[in-house]
Amino acid sequence: MRQDSRAMRPVVEATMYPSRTVMDLSLALALYFASRGMGRVCDASSSEYRPYTSPAKVLLSGLGSDELLGGYGRHRSVFTTRGWQGVIDELQLELDRIPTRNLGRDDRIISSHGKETRHPFLSLSVVSFLAGLPVHLKLDPRLEVGMGDKTLLRLAASKVGLVEASIRKKRAMQFGSHSARMEGGEADRRGDLTISHLPLGIAFAAVQTSIYDVPGGFRAVMFDRFSGVKDKATGEGTHFLIPWLQRAILYDCRIKPRNISTTTGSKDLQMVSITLRVLSRPDTDDLPKIYQSLGLDYDERVLPSIGNEVLKAIVAQFDAAELITQREVVSSRIRADLLQRAGEFNIKLEDVSITHLTFGKEFTQAVEAKQIAQQDAERAKFIVEKAEQERQAAVIRAEGEAEAAATVSKALEKAGDAFLALRKIEASKAIVQSLAGNGNVSYIPSSGGNVLLNVPTK
Image (cartoon, rainbow, N blue to C red; front, side, top):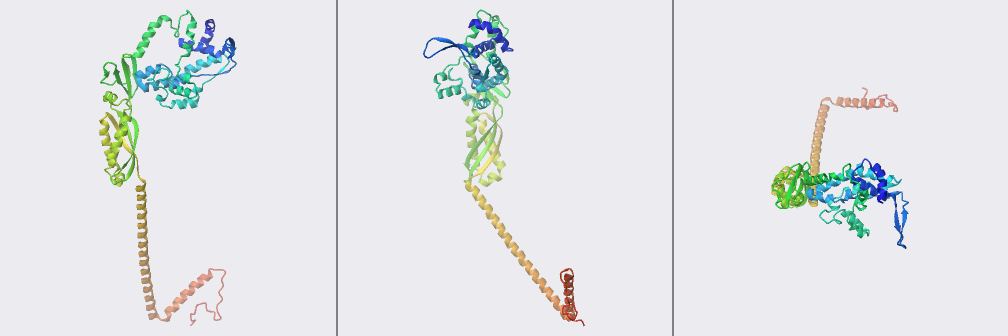
């Protein structure tokens, strides 16, 4: 095998280019011989090994499982120095690096044998599902090696019956294959570096473990194994620590939203469901105190309890109607009390607002019944007013008719039959005009030839 390694090294190096580090070479050599499919097998009925070449043309790769589920040893180191947020950032960095480095190198090596690769862990559905899970479900660096790394995958393996594999410690492919030892007495290389640069590499590694970064919007609390938590938090940027002796705990000091919901009683004993939206952040000057008393999940421990306490106390001072008509006053009272309570735990609130306010079913039905009663009262009032208006109109019409009758009587007394004759002429004129406008009606006068209605001709 060592002779094969020396013979195939130029081919492997040319295929894996532009990757040139000793790590890439070790991985590429192991992958080259594994994907070639040539080896020895032993039948169940015999203890003798015989040569065997696999006819498989499609290979399954486990690439992506360590990047998605935290299977590398460096994840423990990152957790020690930067906490869970550091692990999240490291996993994202490794996942982003897969297409540009690992996939290209592995695909070129395997395809050199005329074979194809499938990556189950890099399918869209698997990546979307695993990337969306909380990081503490994927790994737990606080557990020992073989249990805390790729916890979710180990649990799945145990569920399907692979109990032994589920507790087996991870063994890197490039080290397990001893491919680096195949180089014999040739100088080990890291890219184009020789073994003479080993002290420089050790020094670089020491410096690398002695520095830590605080991203924008974060602060770091320093824990010393001898003196405990330091009194002052570290700001953004790159800082130094003493490996093993000191550990930096990162705090996200950016504003975070939270909804606090509760159901409580008003002053008039009506049930009220209310939701409060709170924008909070830790007091950066008191981060060491927060870490000592509350830990990293300070907001989860404090805000729900004090939020419910303040909401119940303030709502109980107003009746249901006042909660609607005096909403600004209620919101101001809640904000003032909540600011005071949160300040006792070194938490700053940037905004407090009521986003949801509803009442119980009984109160809602009572309000609807009241509105219906008011509408019925308004309708009855309208009917009464309408009847009054109709009565007044009838009186006015009667008075008009009486005045008209009196006028006619006076005219008759004064003019006698002449007034009646005039009215008959006017009526006959109207009838004639109506008949003349209708082409289907013909009027034939009586034998006297008088078209007037009972009006004497003389």
